[in-house]
Amino acid sequence: MPGRTAPLVVILVTGSLGDVAPALNLAVRLRDRGFRLRIGAPANFEEMVTRRGIDFARTGDDIRLLLKDPVARTIIERGAFANLKGQLRVARTWHETTARMAVAACEGADLVVFHPKVTFASSIAEALGVPSAMLAYQPLTPTGDFPIFPISTRSFGRTLNRASYAMLGAEHLFLGGITRRLRRELLGLPSARSHASLRSRPDGSPLPIIYAFSEAVQPRPADWPAHVHVTGYVWDTAPASTEWQPDARLARFLAAGPPPVYIGFGSMPLGEPGKALDLWLSALAANGLRAIIAGGWGGLDEAASGRALPENVHVITGAPHDRLFPLVAAVVHHGGAGTTAMGLRCGRPTLVCPFLIDQPYWAARVEALGAGIAGPSPGKWTGERLTADLRRLVGNPDFARAAGTVAAQLAAEDGARRACDILEGLLAGPAS
Image 1 (cartoon, rainbow, N blue to C red):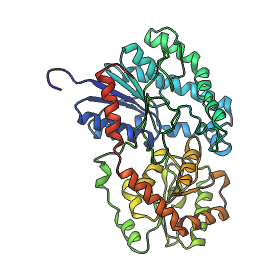
Image 2 (spheres, rainbow, N blue to C red):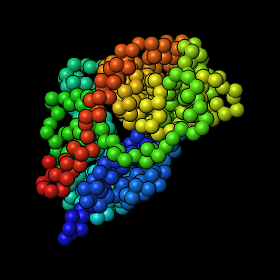
Image 3 (tube, rainbow, N blue to C red):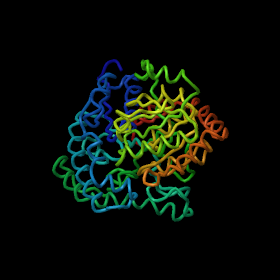
Image 4 (cartoon, helix red, strand yellow):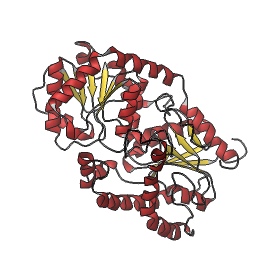
């Protein structure tokens, strides 16, 4: 952009790798168009962001600290509506901490793009007098097609489906007092007319929303307004994981027999990883399956340490999904938006064992596409159920065919390009 300083786009995101990686991919693509970029993210992602040449600002702590909170444990074990008082306490602390850091991260911004859990960003954009947009990986806009995901994966009918999204407004109502105080203290702004930042800006005008998922996985509802965009997944065109190769032990395991099943639950904690490992080992043995088990944050690798594992199982700490999934026959995971997307991108039949929040929704979408099975949550794992689900997953070729069909559709999309076009348009003229 000769003759003037390039606009600065600030992307604020919080959560785990599945939340930060797409934002980083988008930042790289925007930088390639000539924009300056800064990502505000939890401290544990600084090296990943700066390695790609993107400016970094801290906007929170490692999500693992939150997942260790007893409230998170209760949600995983008892569901999204367990311990609402505790959830509110955690949400208030998270909201204020993130908001304070986000103000500093947005210094000099010409455009603010934010994750749904950094909703104070819309007030920051208002104070700066710059456009803003939300970047989300799961549907949050009211529709009659399906209810909001924490409530149910089954339709209640169009009227009740739309009504279910009122819970988003309730969350912002609970945080409204903190938001009003922070607007005064940090930004010198009056109280906002609207705190439902997932639907509108603080002045009540429509907020542009970019849903970085594919219509091949979740078709765009016809009743969504024009400022809501479904772009497709934001893949990295030159991922650092292209340098990854299986180490010698993993390479030998892969070469020693037919493609294994991948089993891994990413950032999700497991209360009793040893017990969980025993259940999966039993189910694998009952089906005569080979498997790669990834430790993740749940500690399955630590539970396996020191054990004499059967020859049909290889345990790893972790590996880039875009490189590992093409090497396996099927994938078993927690149903995070990014992991689900990568399993489908690689055309692998999938068993989703959801833990919390949007994961049951993605499990239901995989099953609706015919590409896999919506399996049990960890609290309902039994040897019999896991054995039966694995048998269905690998024994029914229809799952693999359907997954291959979805993979072909995803290969034809460029969600990052579409998202960049939308954001560049916000910089070029009035926000819409």
